[in-house]
Image: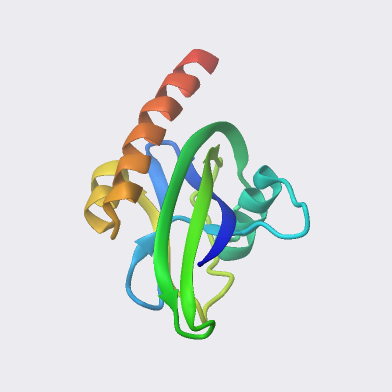
Length: 141
């Protein structure tokens, strides 16, 4: 099995969170593979910028998720291990940076996002991240 270390961002703007809809119709958070000794935080910020056109700031770590799938192109199983970061941005502006991979995106209320998100572990990630985000934002103000 090919094991890939990845990093991604759960990006909040006020009480909304950013999601992307991939070419399979799945609603997900921006993420990417860590290569050549890159830092997890750098990859997460870069993928948020590349996939969503969003300049975000990391405010905390959010935890980790794993998922496995069979790669048809590689003809072998792949396990993605993703380290997540809670991020914030000041604007709901976004641009889909990879239209061949993503067909829709946007900032959604937490309830809307919970309805849209495809995978249960991503819903759990959002729930935990939102609680932590609200706590950090209230402490800062």
